[in-house]
Image (cartoon, rainbow, N blue to C red):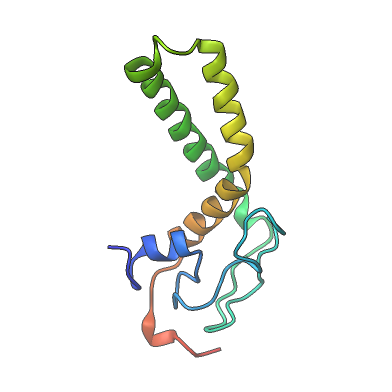
Length: 128
């Protein structure tokens, strides 16, 4: 499920969606150089940004990820934590999580967006 050849591998390992070898970002740490995305895959030569503004669609994916965090927080509050913490504290925790996870969401949304438009093609590996 998470092995090479699956979209989930490409997304969570932040690898090229076509060859699953090259890294999409310059560093592995999302808190250092958060926005430093490579222009092309170092292994297969896939151009990541197809046209100017290609990654604007990744904002919708990031929004979806943030909504998933919010829904999870609210459900956990009403099911597990209702009697232990206040709603105000829940919102403070949620906003703090959103700020801390922003670099991770940024990178995940871009790799998810790349995987919408590119599929795994092992026969193109190594061809620049």
